[in-house]
Length: 220
Image (cartoon, rainbow, N blue to C red; front, top):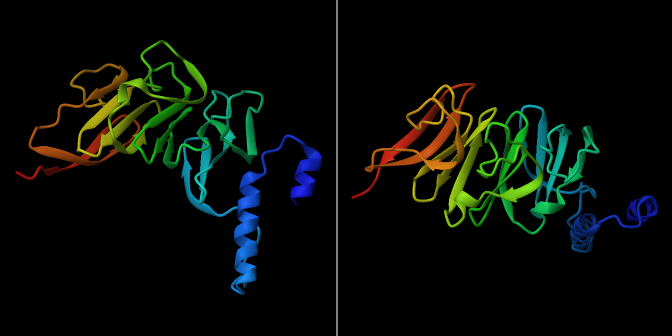
């Protein structure tokens, strides 16, 4: 397999395939490889409206589906759509633990609580507050720097991030009030949602034009 991949593309990054092979070879040596194969082990899968992500056991991210706005995060629009998972090289080494996709944009969350966005941004869904309307590879959201985020979620064109301390942030399209920002308008970057000070947000979920939050009372 590796010989074939290198023959097709001498610059191919085959490190992950090598790691999978070494794990498999180790299991064989221990006599515990019954039923095993050489495929890359998958940890989690995530889906947006028209695109999907695979998170592997080794922390690498693969994307596939529609890429008309850069929502696959592969750094180019040369591939408009694909059914073949593509390695998102910009997220290598970032220790990604969660991904989510909107209609034409995506978010990635790392174990350190950093949030990256990519894809379409014409409704401020990227959260950069600098007028970027398209991002072809993952870029950290400046307003969330220093905030330890534990969960992210998306609507079609807007997003939520929940911090480990129970604070809720929203940004993107908000014409119908779905951002919880007490106005019918967009947020260009993550803004703290005004939740009662004695409550911590545990979860946030979204429909097409509305949102719900799960909260608990903060301990005294």
